[in-house]
Image (cartoon, rainbow, N blue to C red; front, side, top):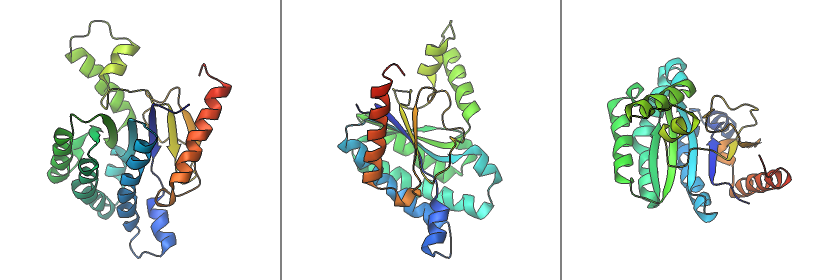
Length: 224
């Protein structure tokens, strides 16, 4: 049994860079961003067509040192959008407040969304993301669409992201035992697998192990 929709909290980039001896810990974010292409390939191999990744929270934009945030903005302007465009299979969706980003980064992401819109697989990236804001945005969209009965199904359908909202499996790297506000509405029934590996060290074998754990848990409790 494979999950339909996988979520990944790609944590540990700066720790990885420090352990690897980089003078600038921000180099870990460059390596971590490059690793997203591997993740897309793994999902393609296992025919998982819905993927959500945690890239940058609104809270981090506001609270991290400016030098760190500017480096991340550069990755959002250059690396990540082009990774998705080059994949030839994945449609990009962004969930978050792009007004928090510089114009160059926001436009690069919007351009990638437009260029990949008709593709069969769906990647949602949480960028400028706030978990409460995500739910509020879903309610606003439902109301704007003229929905008269605002229930769970209506809000779910209106949430930002790809067409399948519910996340079946969440993988968090770096050993942290928390979700850090990762799509609370969409992960209410998700299985969670925590890997001790830092994101740049997370391998295809680790991904396969997470899928196996998911399958074993769902076989034990198929109603979940």
